[in-house]
Amino acid sequence: MNQFTWSRRRTALSRFWTEFRRHRAGLLGAVVLLVAVALAVMTPFVSDPADLDVTRATGDKMAPPDLSFPLGTDESGRSILVMLLWGSRVSLLIGFMSALLSMVIGTMIGVLAGHFRGWLSAVLMRITDWFLVLPTLVLALVLAAVLGGGSSTLILAIGVTSWASTARLIRAQTLAVEARPYIERSKVLGAGHWHIMTRHVLPSVAPLVLANTTLMVGTAIVLESTLAFLGAGSGQVSWGGMLRGSYDWGAATSGAWWYILTPGFCIVAVVMAFTLCGRALEAVLNPRLREAGR
Image (cartoon, rainbow, N blue to C red; front, side, top):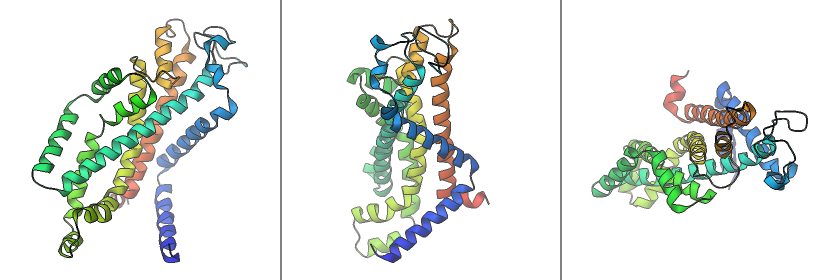
């Protein structure tokens, strides 16, 4: 890669950072996400996974926060703080991977449906409409129940049930891109379908995919938490699983507010951070929104 290319990329990154800094809410969301990801990555270095074993719990049942357990304990005497740290790894992993899977499926179908016309586009859009009509949560719950437990099952269940809205969005953007004159020139010069989709369409829709992926991660985390609360979790400690445990053991009626509020706050904070960051990215990467905001 020559120096000119690197110079153009540095200029583009500098311009992107300048635009992104103007969105205070987006910066706040990015900071919260960095802190959450850093804590999840550092968890194995600051905590032993054996602390999640109920047979090794040292605290009292449903003990309120104190110096030994800053966020209290659960029904087995395990530290809520330790459970939150390890649960963040599961919730964030499932959120990221399922959102990535959803974006890949949605982008592929959206580009194909927008590039090819006729019966192929009609079939792909009817499949997309079918997934749009079905309740995502119910379909994901059924898939998780049929395929069994595990993080990979939840990733697959969430990913294959939440791509339809992305496909419609990418198809609309693909139709707009392919209406531009340089696409016609490429066809006249002999460019094939693969060349047009990979060299012209995908780079044009990539900013929209990036912004939508950021928004989708928050949705995937909420879906994972909901599935875990409904009993279709991964079998590992997660924020949704903690909420399920607090419900099963009557934390609300026994006054154990720390068992309910802490995982709930983590879910709300991370989902809100992804939303703020995604909206800021959308405003920066979408030229129409960028011009409207000035």
